[in-house]
Image 1 (cartoon, rainbow, N blue to C red):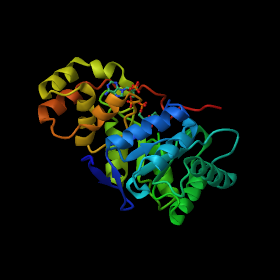
Image 2 (cartoon, protein in one colour):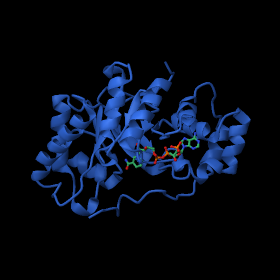
Image 3 (cartoon, protein in one colour):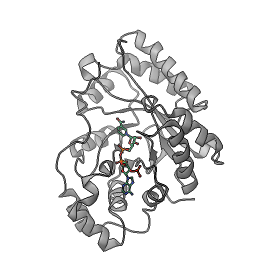
Image 4 (cartoon, rainbow, N blue to C red):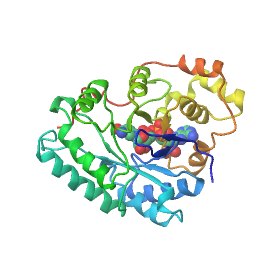
Length: 284
Ligand SMILES: NC(=O)c1ccc[n+]([C@@H]2O[C@H](COP(=O)([O-])OP(=O)(O)OC[C@H]3O[C@@H](n4cnc5c(N)ncnc54)[C@H](OP(=O)(O)O)[C@@H]3O)[C@@H](O)[C@H]2O)c1
């Protein structure tokens, strides 16, 4: 077993602070990667309906030889198409989408269900969140949260419901550390989960300041970045289909970044996103 720390969420449940993401992985590829990840010691898996690999993820979960209750499975609602998701029909559509995800995963509950994108130009999510309240009350989603929400959407949700999302999954890495959003989350009991925690394996991992810190600790830059997430109190879900990297990304215990390291990493902030700005992102 690994020594992955966990974080207590606002509903009292716990989530491993390091999980495994499978965006841009084929269905069969996800089955292989998730199996490798679980064998390596990961216990938390992040998929989504739109990734089209819930079935492969589910096959790996079913055959990994680890009891279901020891695994943490997250999937996400793809709130796309012509539906008025903020209107009344949104609730039934959410429940149907959830049933479809569960069937593909081959599970009778997920540990965490997220609204994938806010699409603020289409209104707020009060009705959709009512369906999430039902899923949480029925225990079919042990926890519910959001992804790519900004403070305006979180404020709106808090006004419409007493059920506070357990976490908000957003783009977050040393180049784009989401300092203000994290402060908002801390104030309102919402955990922060980082997508693209390794900056998608691009320029971030060649950043000279980070290379220097990695050399100092005898670690890789990816391990330093993941250590930074953990020490920042953020949940990280790195993706890899490469078995050696899957293991490398989990091996982040046994060293500590000091204040000088943390300051140098903070200094690498560029303010540049890799993904779209959720406040303007739509796909219709
Ligand atoms: N909610 C959302 O809207 C949203 C958006 C994006 C992502 N996500 C979630 O977040 C997860 C992670 O984000 P991501 O996949 O965008 O990016 P990421 O985890 O930051 O980076 C993945 C990339 O880095 C490479 N990599 C992984 N470990 C490495 C290492 N140790 N050394 C060098 N390169 C390494 C991978 O290559 P190989 O695979 O070839 O090894 C892959 O190309 C996704 O899989 C998904 O679950 C959510």
